[in-house]
Amino acid sequence: MSSRGKRILDIALRANESQRNMYACESNVSGTDSEGEVNCLFGDHSSDEYQPDYEDMSDSDRESVTELQPNNFVVRRNEDENICENTVTTHANTLNFNLSFGYPKSDTCSIWDAGESNEEHVENYHEAYDALKTDREKVKGSYNLSYMTMDLQQTIPLPRLSTSKAFYLRQLWMCNFGTHISTKEVEKAVFCSWTEDQASRGSSEVFSCLLTILELEDSVKNKDHLIIWSDSCAGRNKNFLIICLYQYLIHKGLFKIIDHKFPEVGHTYLDSDRDFGRIEKNLRKHQKSIERSLLNPVENIKS
Image 1: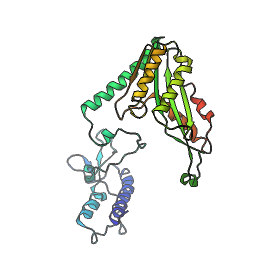
Image 2 (image 1 turned 180 degrees about the vertical axis):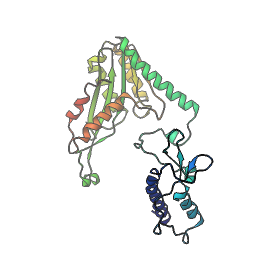
Image 3 (image 1 turned 180 degrees about the horizontal axis):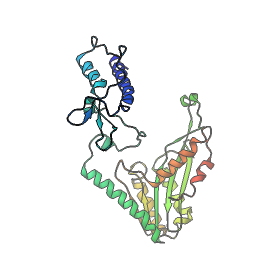
Image 4 (image 1 turned 45 degrees about the vertical axis):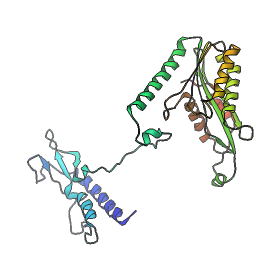
């Protein structure tokens, strides 16, 4: 922190300490103006009161320190009760200090972060979420409809160690393809996992995983209509190989209609991402290892 920042912070801390004493002011404090404001003294203002050193300060430093001086704080009297409200105004309240508390955001929309969002983008993302919600509710009233979301989870290092030295060593990566299936009878999550020495993360792997799940999973059998939601990644979900897979499934008679829908770019949080979040929560409880049994808690997930 710079010397200017330290001086301003010191002034702010002392003003904050004086602010606590200000709330103890009584009704007989003098100095009431026409608007009913009472100027309360901060502390005892004895000879050892802190005085900033203005000689070594620049003009901007003097202005900042002056705004934070205790004399600039005012307590407003409550007209209904003969007490001082916990409301403090200062000349510095016109400044935007940009102070806030909250969890850091992740996986945000790049268009919004760049400040390039427009009405069309906002309208498309709202319409996509409304359609997603409609499809999710529609399967509860139809036996011939199946709803599915699919995505690839972030790769998981093996072995999963908390030791700092492991970060600099070469580790084996585990891939996990997740689907969230909803029908009138059941709602569950199904995963296909493999390591990087067995296969990559391209369209061929997505093709194989999706075909295996649709052929072997009993919950999607004997359904006429399949609705799939995924992000619009061209290398995995939005390519000619996936279209060929859908043609094969229809030709084989597994489905009559297959709809593949894509939400707006930057707003692709689907049911599969919620399943991945539960997996990550389990992994944080088992920092030193990873087993396939960790995927079992999300074998049957109820929304």
